[in-house]
Amino acid sequence: MDITPAGSAPQPPTSTTFPDVPELDQEAMAAARRRHGILTKPPGALGRLEDLSIWLAGVQGTCPPRPPGRIRVIVIAGDHGIAAAGVSAFPSEVTAQMVANFAAGGAAVNVLARQVGASVRVVDVAVDTPEPTAPGGVDGTAPPERYRIRRASGRIDQDDALTSAEVSAAFAVGRLIADEEIDAGADLLIPGEMGIGNTTAAAAVIGTLLDLEPAEVVGRGTGIDDQRWMIKVAAIRDAMRRARHAGNALSVLRVAGGADLAALAGLLVQAGVRRTPVVLDGVIVCAAALAAETIVPGARQWWIAGSRSPEPAQRFVLNRLGLEPLVDAGLRLGEGTGALLAVPMLLAAQRTLAEMATFDQAGVSSGKNDPSDPAPSESEGDGEGSGDGPAADGTSTDAP
Ligand SMILES: Cc1cc2ncn([C@H]3O[C@H](COP(=O)(O)O)[C@@H](O)[C@H]3O)c2cc1C
Ligand SMILES: O=C(O)c1cccnc1
Image 1 (tube, protein in one colour):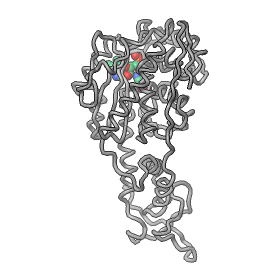
Image 2 (image 1 turned 180 degrees about the vertical axis):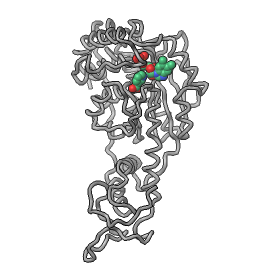
Image 3 (image 1 turned 135 degrees about the horizontal axis):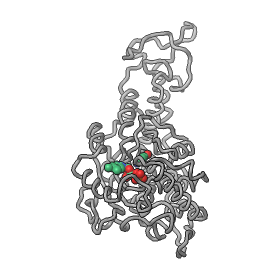
Image 4 (image 1 turned 180 degrees about the horizontal axis):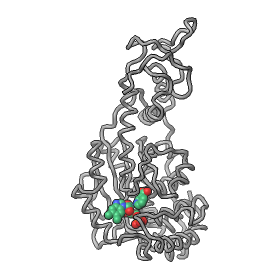
């Protein structure tokens, strides 16, 4: 697709092509639905676990699906010039300080990752320090300069966040990271982020792409007071005004987003290209997801929504993408924490589909009271697993 220049600074036009994203495996999904129909439970009784397990079968192309073997959280770190306007309750220095905290294993994302056996990688794409703050590559040996796009993205109420070359480079870095991780064996990706001021950029990107009012998309971020809220609305308004005529989603990321958002968008697209599932996190990751789906339609099939953010802009994105968060626990942290909280549900979905006994195996009557209408045998299945089905005969499925 063509990338048209936009924003105040004139940019040379560039042209970039994007990959197609494959469809989920419909046969594996149909097999998962059939299997749900013969497991020892009333049809649909596992609720969203059934949908999740069917999705997992579709992304893995096999039924029953396997448990994820290597869950990777990738925290994309980058500062934002807009922080200088006073849109956050915290100063920009916190971004670099938190990168050190991630490396030391002391952040919330580290704790929640440990809980589900995931590992955490931090990538510095635009932290406001002279030298990159995080090591490069999956094993930390690649040059960190490869991932660093610039020192803080531009102040979006006055300037473009990035140049054309930088937004393309950031998107490419996101794709590179996904490739590196998947090549190293990751089979479930959890994108997270760290960057003071990034809820302002996320809101501006979402507001622009969905044509919303600044006051509809602004949130309290790190916990700003009313005075900062007004500054933040004005910053989003000015950024949206600059981005309105950007032309396409990548250009919106260039004008009103930043290196972190563009890298996240590239990572999300490439996960789909590589048939690798993703759990989405809060409003910043969702802003990148909206851009990614706009750039490469269909990428969203490979994602599920982990957690509802109190940031109002996230809801608009999830509605547009047709995703319903698994968890609504009031988390407003980012880093990938909300997504990690949803991982146990995904694991439960895999396990129930893979390990539950069938009616035949357990010798349990399969739920048709009319003796002239015998239950489907295991080999036949019933063709429909989850969703509305006939009432069960009341046979217990040993629910806890
Ligand atoms: C100590 C600390 C740790 C964090 N971890 C994630 N965020 C989250 O808060 C920031 C966005 O909020 P705003 O737009 O209001 O600056 C991002 O860094 C996000 O990841 C943190 C914020 C702080 C202060
Ligand atoms: O929704 C999020 O991810 C979020 C919300 C507030 C602050 N940082 C991140």
